[in-house]
Image (cartoon, rainbow, N blue to C red; front, side):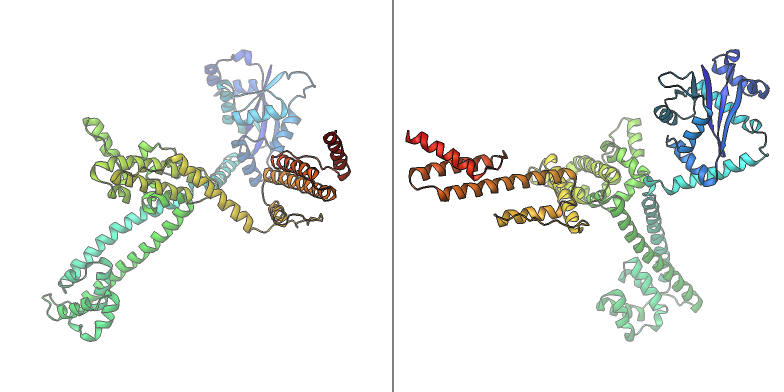
Length: 553
């Protein structure tokens, strides 16, 4: 059986034919030793077909298709032209060797060409890649390397740009920067306190907050210039008039040393930098909260934005966090303590990063481990919902948070919590209701047809008309159900109309009672869900006359 080899380079599709394989044998080691020698390898492999790409964009599209296992129209046409034609009903007397199993299975399904991808074929393709520039005569030196470099850059850029799984990279970078800013702001604030305390040491005990201290130090500058005129402005900064008066009085009787104007200017500039960093930290925190609500809304509503972002950054991505079991998520961040405990055969840690959650702090000392295990379980569920759900919603996270609150009450007061299946059913129902509301809010594009038939029950017909108006926005299965309900109601209304007309023409007495009994039976049959055909008035009269004659006899 002849063997053809498909090779996808950076500039073209090429097809090679391997013949005389008996001389080498089907041994991989023999092929590996023979491909280094072009004179020997060139006798086995010959170029059959060649199809260059139109442009760099075309090469990128073909490369993306091959990597995803999709056969393009260009590749199909190339194979149909260069491969031997197979008659209908007969097996091909050749096979196609490919480097990717996915593209081979697609070619086999579409063109019924047997494809193989094994070590022997891969070694032959490796030899083609090694000597490819020798097979093409008109190829200039350096052209193939340029094409490979350009395609590699564009392919990598496209993969980075369209990789939806790396959206959480912004959260990872933001939480790293937030932690770094916290350390830096604390360090710089201590430096401002120490620096300005040489001039005004009493201010440290009056103002405890770092941001306020830097703000007050920038405002005061020289303590000897403090007077009662600056009390209103100090009150706006500190937020307390008594504290502002205390600062002014302390400035008058301060034990600090005098400072030159240049020193005070440097302290003022450094305090301004600390204030700017603190303000930027607030903006970064708001940005992180917004990103977490977009990427992992359920995890953020369950455990908080900061702790959730730390879990994602420590796992590497939201997908990696979703793949972690709850036992791994529970001790995420305490790996050193875990391996130390395993090495010394001591007690393993009960919690890692989730210790920063408020739920662990609210639990009693003997229930902290149980609470951490339960919270890790719920965080694992929330992360999987966020990772694999199509539409973002916070309903599941809120329900899971309610479960954790109930478990806290169970540990403290003994109140039995709800079952997980009941809570999840309630969450699914609420999400479906939200979807229905969103569909109702969107106006229907197709015009609603009005019913021309006379209305008997106003309330029922109004319900039917409103449902028909919304039917354009709902799925096909719901449309069919509503059509069936509408047909049932119409048939019941028509049966009732015919019965009422017949009863008006009948006599009173025993005959009246019998007709009422029959009416009740028919109404019950109509309500039972069996749709009866519409009965004409003449048929009903004939049946009733027959029943009368039987009763008289």
